[in-house]
Image (cartoon, rainbow, N blue to C red):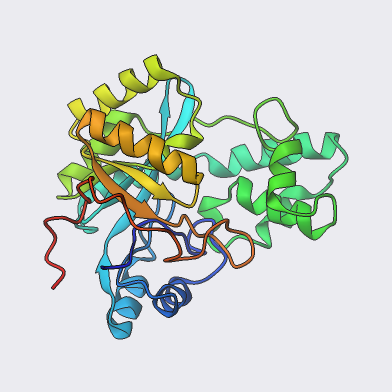
Length: 279
């Protein structure tokens, strides 16, 4: 059985390691088919592809696009696309814009909460200044000893209703799926268990996602509990969605799940890679 990991991050977005090091870590953990899915950014693809091929892994182009839907941030993973597609490239540029201003506003709120110089501190953890994010602020807050780990940071700061939370208007769901499809790729809902969607809202969201051409959902992911593996396997079956698998790895010692460390997809589901040439 192939060990497939189609969701992880490098320091091109909010991961801690360069793409080639993420590739090496994936291979050392037994990954056979791998995609780097940095947030709203595809500049890591050339390095990732070269490293993966040198290590004997099948490489899949990937990206994780931030979407605003019903006032929530939802992530859509794109896989198997042509990264040279101009509409996709320009769409991602537009989606990334505005992050610096948002980060400065986050820093101002944190200063009022007793955490000064957070913008400058977060920048020390940023590989790509265009993609400064909450994760970089979290690493700074841990570095200065205010919190012991990422979970504690996100229980006290950077989430809605807490200091440091500043909303951002991302891409629309229609745009994100259209960019992926226009580049020849497939669109997958990332870690659905992380969103605050009741049954009615989830039905509306997935109906819209499918109308635009979305075809998949992450079922076995490092952002789900084992109970949620079963829950979202049932959702995938109900809505006729292909199933994906990915660790959502960001950094050693920080991520809940290591690259390649998840259980396999339930055999009753059709994987997103079912028709890929991997032999």
